Length: 502
Ligand SMILES: Nc1ncnc2c1ncn2[C@@H]1O[C@H](COP(=O)(O)OP(=O)(O)OP(=O)(O)O)[C@@H](O)[C@H]1O
Image (cartoon, rainbow, N blue to C red):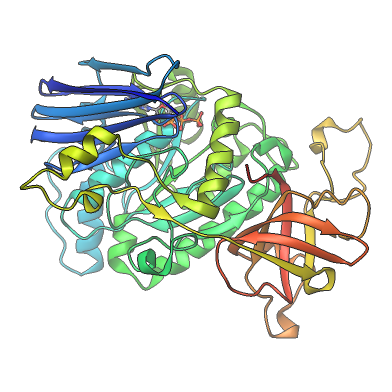
């Protein structure tokens, strides 16, 4: 493939940002030559090359001004990706919010350590306790970006904070795959390099060499990208996450004071996606209860802000954040491509080829070794194994594609409950297993007395795999998985995601 390459130096004034939107097959390499710069709150180190790819859309912001060297390669024939500098950003508002949350953390930790500090002037309106922040807003408002920025600023504060980042947007992918809801304490800034890794890489998919520095998120498998596909199940999984996060914080005063940041899908705020009652904002209420939310942040939606003030303003803080003009409207086909990147990335790791010009430059006399400068290489080799049908117990939740209760005719009863685990027989025609993405669950409770019917709903995920072949005659199937552990005797959950290795 022929490629075109351009290197350019950009000088950014203080409080401006360089925005870029990459097309497919385009790689961007950014090196900070001078000054200070950050990508969604994660600081860039001077002289290090950062690579961006897989249609990444992001911005390099500078508080004090900086000089960037930017090299872009794209396949010949493609139009160049978008790039421009903007001096209109909402970063000052984000910083103010970070400072308010920081005060809550400091106050909460000092109370936990029995050394109350005088409450600074002007902070008397802040709710008590550590910040438990719920970020809501319409589609493409920049919610995930806002969560990343406030999490990264907390980590950078130098207080050893480890805010719990919770992703309840099953369309997003979090640390593993789309279709999940997950939580993970953040101890180092979350990088932004490709949408395949929106929140950084994890130990679940990382090779052993990387596992120590990689994140270990707690993951539940919802199995669908859309909230409306099974809001009751999502409600239950959010409550499970909440219980886990709370009990994890019980013995960790520093983690507890660091607080919680919950990123939500747009449908929580705009659609009526609630369980059974179908009440508007039902899943927002679920999050408030599950994570003991004391701050709601509404990104870029005046009316929603007013509604939240009216509904919750007497019990908790509702803060409005402006939407950044840089946020890109992501359409359905982009979102579907990103889902494929994420599953591919989970299996094969991330590799973005550095632009050839940069490699030569990095190898120049006086520079450090070229590969160590490129921070995006974590290639994995997944294994393809054949297992017997009997080796695995497979369920789907709610059985088949289900319509929400509200879509049923008045008075009609759902035959299979939305929360009922339905066994999937791989030998049955139309099982849908071929190319299906499955979640391997943690083992059932070894104590028979502790077992219950819907236990599989409450088990977290230990790994994912994809069924690549089904041989009904031989009663065998072939699966592709990123780690060598055996899956025999285990329970797996199916969802509606399919993936083919291309
Ligand atoms: N200042 C910016 N400059 C360039 N791109 C940006 C900027 N802020 C956000 N983006 C990009 O815009 C896209 C949408 O942002 P983001 O994912 O934060 O929105 P969201 O509200 O969480 O989306 P969703 O509709 O999926 O809930 C992302 O690709 C993000 O990286």
